[in-house]
Image (cartoon, rainbow, N blue to C red; front, side, top):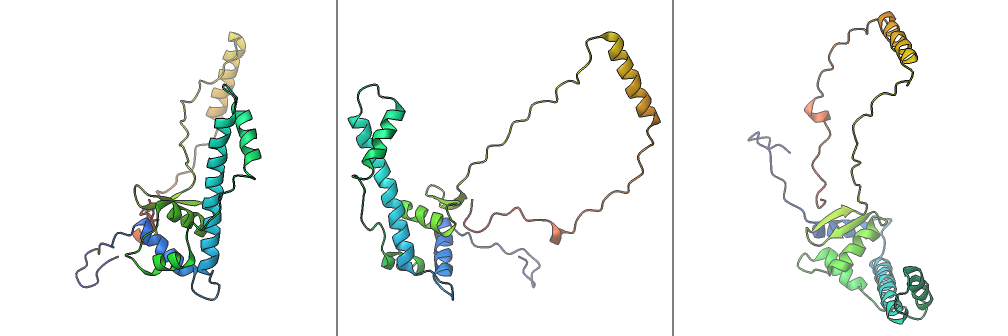
Length: 201
C-alpha cells in the first residue's frame, strides 16, 4: 500500500493468528448465511471430546495390554474401549465464542483456537500456539532431486558407435531454432505477491 501524499509505502499492522480467528468468526456468524455460535461451539466441543476419548482409550489399552504386546493388539483394545470411555462435556460455550470474537481482551485456550481454525477451514488449517499464526494442516516436504543419471550406452562397442553416428547425423540435419526476441518483464502490478495473508505463517 502506498501513501498518496508522501509516496512512501505504508506499513500494514501485524495481524496475529488469534486476531485472524476473531475476524473469521465474526464473518462466519454474520450475514444472511451466518452460522450460529451455538452450532460452532457444539462442533468444537465434540471434536475436543473425541480427541480426549481416543487419548484416554489408548492410555487405558496400554495399561491393560500384556507386557510385550504389539501395537496391533493395543489398537484393538483401544478400539473396543472407545464406546465405554467416551469423554463428554462442554469444552467451549456459545457465550465464550461470542465474547472471543467481539472482545479483543478475552482469549481462549490454544486447543480451542486450534479447533476453531479447523472448523472454519474444514480441517485444512491449524493454529500454531508458539508463533500465534494460522498454518496449513499439511506438511509438504520438498523432494530431493538427485543428479541426472548418465545416458545408457549399448554394451556392444560397434552398436554404440553406430548409435552415436546416427545421433550426430540427426543433429546436423536438424534445422536451426528460430530466433526469439526476449520476453519483457511483467509490470510490478502483475507480479504475484509473496507476502503471506494477515495472521498466516
